[in-house]
Image 1 (cartoon, rainbow, N blue to C red):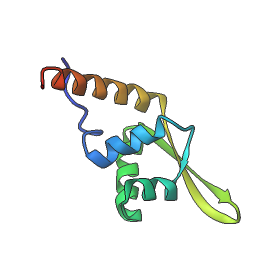
Image 2 (cartoon, one colour):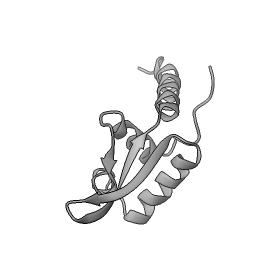
Image 3 (cartoon, rainbow, N blue to C red):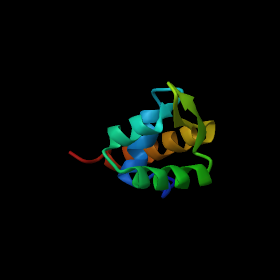
Length: 95
């Protein structure tokens, strides 16, 4: 068994990546509200995940407002799957 991925281990990062599996990309503000965190907290989590290429971000304009979209990369999707597999193995014996 390989270990848990320390880049995904933080609950907010795990939830962020899980949310991104269901969409092609999500607006920063939508993610912030879903995670119930501040802009700065989400920004730090996104930056950490961008650094390891698990997510990518792009800036643009939507309905006349500047916004940032976040999406899960192929590498991020594989890392999340591996992390979840380790979690499932760890809890398999828990009753």
